[in-house]
Image (cartoon, rainbow, N blue to C red; front, side, top):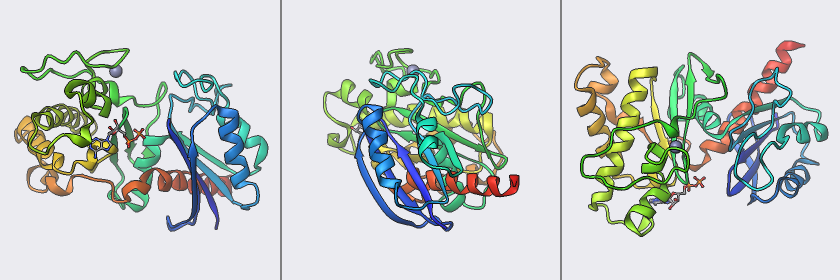
Length: 296
Ligand code: ADP
Ligand code: ZN
């Protein structure tokens, strides 16, 4: 089986071919430019690859409602050219195969549930803490959509009492993304996150905000695993800080072994590493192929 996978990011696109076991056999990447140019690169890549299906995990916001006339569109992004762009319809015109279509973070959650850190579980939540903060939700064996899709990067947070940084989210100022994404670290401290020493005060604040978001997630959704990816989470010393603050906040209220005794295996990095996004797109493609088979 040959499944095409597209990880569509705000700065780069990764395209690949994989199989039903989550093994990526070929991959390419190119920068995200205007949509016509970018999709023309995507189309050239898949042209002779004879794929059975294609899965797409993309930056958004996107339209995920199959009954909407704009299903498969990127909706309101500030990215030049992409707002209201028919991403999926353009590819469907070129390739007569089943397509999977979801957000990049839902795709990553699905990839992790299929082959990664949440393999075998029927729920998990995937956070990316990078240029922005995104949250993908897999619950009761399905990816969660809704009015649009979860936008957990923008939840409001309680401020740290010593924190005077105003936050940088253009919509909300001091939401999670405004306080904890990579650019927030840079704006607050004047250097990139990768240049801050592990004992810098920045990490205590960073863990404080991420742990608040995770505590809310545990209380609201009760996921069986929480996976933290994205550039900022390459700072692995954040994990113990976050786990401890989650335990402190929950204070024994959630009586699950995973939180009380096994938190090191509960809040974890992606099992698929930097392949979480592409494998997630692959899993979406595989799922689309399976549902098309059932529908026949
Ligand atoms: P994107 O979100 O654009 O897909 P990333 O997940 O790599 O890409 O996130 C990029 C952001 O993460 C940037 O703001 C960058 O400064 C920050 N970042 C990348 N690597 C590190 C690191 N090792 N430590 C802290 N911050 C990092
Ligand atoms: Zn926001």
